[in-house]
Length: 72
Image (cartoon, rainbow, N blue to C red):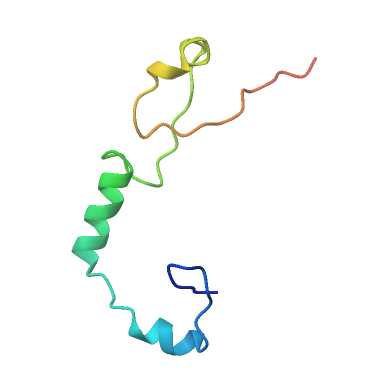
């Protein structure tokens, strides 16, 4: 559902959706690159033991993944 600034839903959702202006591919790519700190949004980053000890030092664009556990 789409709503206004007061979280009230628009009575005709389709009319509201038609009123939204599309972003150009160039602008969309620029927004994605800025939001992902320059990393490709589909890249997967792996964490190291050092990242586990000092998570505040992880690089921007880092993507969390649970640690790998070995089965005995």
